[in-house]
Image (tube, rainbow, N blue to C red; front, side):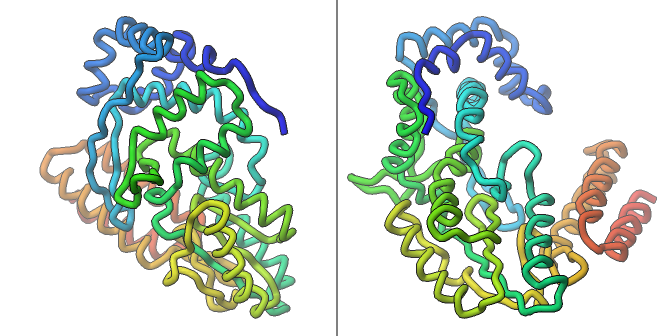
Length: 348
């Protein structure tokens, strides 16, 4: 395993911080906190740099709020200063860990994402079922309270196997320990905030340990994962049922995680496999019912904002085109037409 030394200076260099600022501010230029930081950009960047050099840097507290996407999620938003640093860390660490990630891990990676994850699973189902001519089953699992229960000590230990720079490890510990959840106690600190860019990388680093066990130890070919949701495909239903118990044991002993008991199931391919907002059935894919409901609900809300002169017609149209783009990845002609009708009748 290749290890990396002397990366701290790469992370905290003014050049990296400025590039990270440019990446961070995309699409956020009108935000009040972003504009305030930019007003004295050079001073803020060099102040952050000096705090890091002297190791006087302390992560600020988070601002928390809830979103529904589609389920209710508790988001923790860091300060602009800290989010710029998150980008700086990501720019250096991601190229180090990315080559070790398996091909069928699709969360928060370049040229991956939900649509490619759905396509990969669809191809696996077709291959195992031999184009729906043979029995085919899927084991679908979800880790219980994943982001809330990531164990800080285990995460730091995994990272330290690759990163041999004590200054960089100090900084990563400061980021990791900046947030804990109610699942922590005096001895075990847990949780990574959903709102951090670094959390996306930490999640992949953490779950890569599980991925490697799946691929290297169990030698499972047909496996796909997106964050804490994963699917395994096989022609043997009993094998998958028994496998779920093994996987739960491995998650508990190696990563101190648990499968969600009500979100583990084995289903026939012909019944439809629900994954990442789509239901995959032989020969086509459908949007999940909740996905359709969310699209229509959000479009209705945007129409209300448009009719109240709160957003422009261009913004409204961008929302429509975004949702139509999502629907192109599934067999959704009727849904797309209904959405267009809702839009056109709503603005007239």
